[in-house]
Image 1 (cartoon, rainbow, N blue to C red):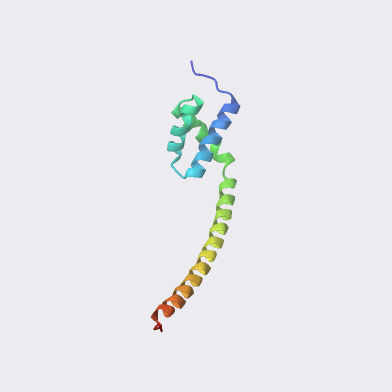
Image 2 (image 1 turned 60 degrees about the horizontal axis):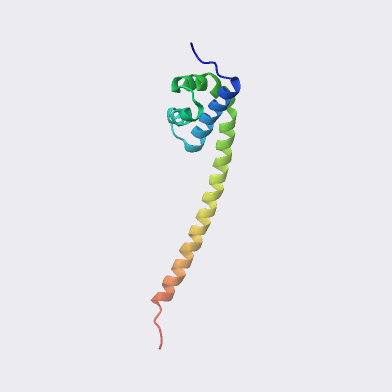
Length: 104
């Protein structure tokens, strides 16, 4: 006879799988295998729950987070480019200092 799991456990399990999947970027199957021992449910059961209940809840959130991450990465890239320009100018300045003859 199959076990009956509470809706709270099911929701928590699906959330754990999708949160782990979003954080690590690993395949969903790997996230399921990691989460299963903590919950005491079967892999196949959790996979079915994820297919049935997961995507409908998480379709809009990842898109928003991707846009935020894209903006953050663009700012970081611009800052890195500015720092690179400063370092290039500094290295040219110090290289010119090394090329000058020293007087003793």
